[in-house]
Image (cartoon, rainbow, N blue to C red; front, side):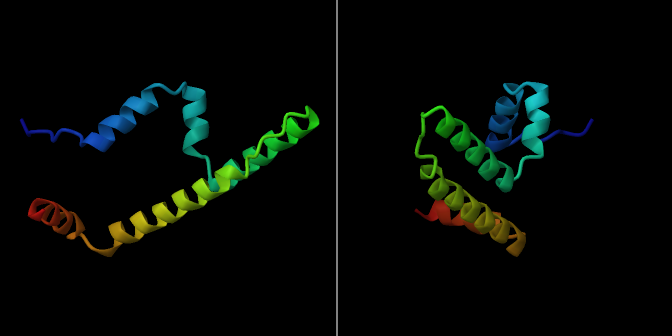
Length: 95
C-alpha cells in the first residue's frame, strides 16, 4: 500500500475552517469574488445609512487592496519557478 503524505499545516487549517461553514455558505464562499465583497460592503453601507447607523466601511478598502496585492504576489511567485519552495526552505535554515 502506498504511503499517503500528510496534509500540510495550511491545508489542515483550511480544512478545519471549511468544516465550520454551513454547506450553503460554503458554496457561496467558493464562488465569491472581490467585486462581490465590494458590492456587499456598499449594500451594508446603504442599509446602515437608511437606518442612521453609518459605519466607516471605507476602512476596509486598504485591507482589501493589500490582500489583493498579496494574492497577486503569491500567484506570481508560485508561477515563477518550481524551485521556489526549495530556495525558501534553504534560506530559512541559513538564519
